Image 1 (tube, helix red, strand yellow):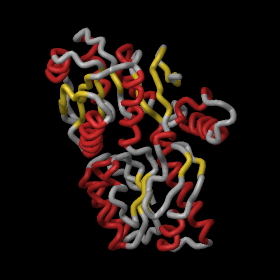
Image 2 (tube, rainbow, N blue to C red):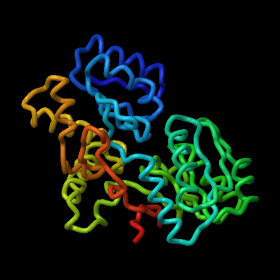
Image 3 (cartoon, rainbow, N blue to C red):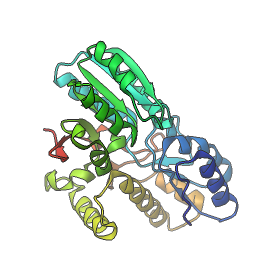
Length: 310
């Protein structure tokens, strides 16, 4: 049973109610955005139906709700990866610009916590709206504060607008993006302004560049081939999150020999070392994401394509 919430929170709530109360589903996969997941996740414990979200916000699984899981790597691990790279470059002053939706608010909270905790100075904290079409004002403020690096946190199209505005303003300060733009669509929207930017992302978009011994490589290459031949478009991290969610639910059903919601929930929590597109998942009663920072590669944009940064 498939519904499209069009990333509209009200449509998401209505679709969820229909799935839980009318359609008799055994588990739900989705939504793909953090704000929509946060709006509906309270419905699953009363319904005793498991949810496997395809959205990234840490709040989805912290604190743990027994009935809620997620497949994307957490924003905390993405921030750690960005700041570790920034530290290796000797940067000291960080500026952040985040979108004012559920994903951006979650990322902003982690950035505001970890930037000082990891020894950096937070010199700017700018916010933009999901539908804003010009962020020149925020970037001008950032430019005047002379940070060593800028971290943008959002999903398309905002980060592409910021990329173009940055180029227009002649800002050469290194720009990090979040894993929320790990799709060729970002490079397409940002154009030449994407060149040289950095982001943490799962290995799916760089499957051919990872070592043959990496446990995910075979799956990633097979998935990429199937996806691109089926949809005639470049593979994206986000389709991978839904694939992982479905495969994890199927694995839980196989493990328990039961498709009852309680059994699916209980067995999801027992999954260990499961190779997915987003990483190698190991769930527990206290970890409903099952991934850590090792699920990420640091990726750069060179020549209009993704390149692993060594």
